Image 1 (spheres, rainbow, N blue to C red):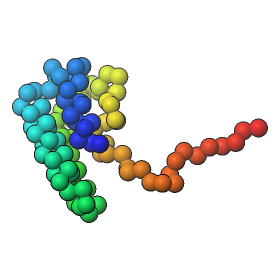
Image 2 (image 1 turned 180 degrees about the vertical axis):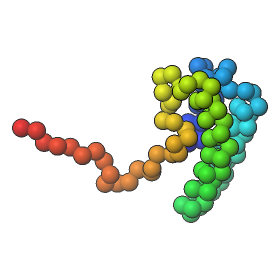
Image 3 (image 1 turned 90 degrees about the horizontal axis):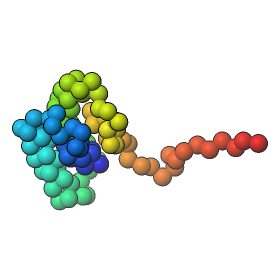
Image 4 (image 1 turned 135 degrees about the vertical axis):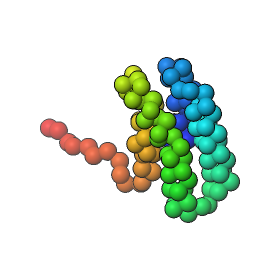
Length: 103
């Protein structure tokens, strides 16, 4: 999810001109490499997935932070949330929304 969010951010028309080509290439290459690893290692342990995400975040976060600093934040919000915040937790069966009954 984080990889696809980062790729989407790099292709966002509003942000495209604000990110240097070298940074875009670096993030896209790392995202593509991570996606290729994920495709080939679907049975890897949770720790391996977390390690790969941290490697990707180490490349992406400084660039995204620099982008936010130069733009004063992303107008309209970022798809999937702020990339520097990490990936959302994986869905777990019983962690759905809490519904209160109102009379």
